[in-house]
Amino acid sequence: MSANQGILFQTGIFIALGSNLPGPWGSPEETLQRAVRELASRGVEIEKTSRLYRTKAHSEVEQPDFVNAVASVNSSMPADALLRVLKRIEAQAGRFLTVKHHHADHRWAPRPLDLDIVSYKSLVRNWLMSRPALNATLTLPHPRAHERAFVLRPLMDVAPRWHHPVLGLTPAALLARPSVRDTGAILDVDGLLVEMNSRRYSKDITSPRTEA
Image 1 (spheres, helix red, strand yellow):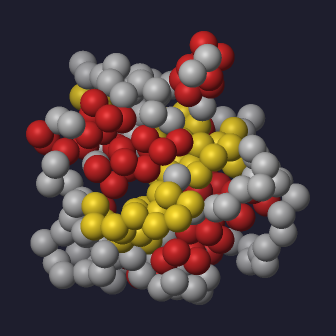
Image 2: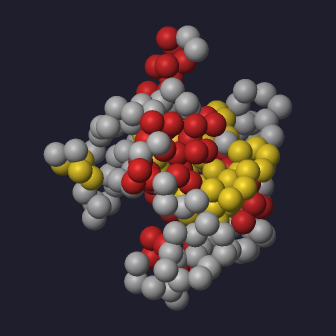
Image 3: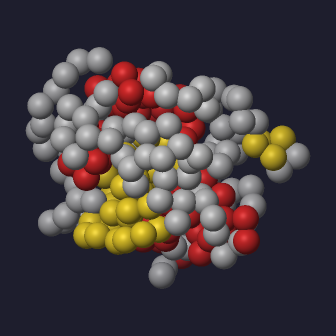
């Protein structure tokens, strides 16, 4: 890997995608693919996507397995604006219609779509004394991604040389830590989230739009 590629990993934006319920956009796999199209249609440049990972739901309540992936993207919009875009896409996919009917700890509730910013250009925000502020509107890097196998394994697909901006560890090194082993066991691996014919996913791709 060239030095320039290393710089790209540290200035990149990584988005985690997850789904374990069918929704208005179809199956979990179809929902994740549609979410990528929605991002592209809003001017977010899709650089690379991981394979699809089927993972066991990390919950005390019985629920379907998740399908997880990570996308490496590029955007000029600030992190807060990007987060708002992600929340609108989640709402379009039916996220908040399902989560509100489940346990108050919605982190582990089943949902048709979950989109999280894992890292935004290596910006560190709301991390205090190396511990994230879990109740902040936006904590960067994501306050729990470094503890989740279902984020770290697909992140290895798109940015294996990336280093966590606070902990200084690669996805593989984070994944090897004992605290990560039981957080969403990976059950199966499928093909790429998006089959790309070129290095970058076209921003001109069209998809049905529903205004949120």
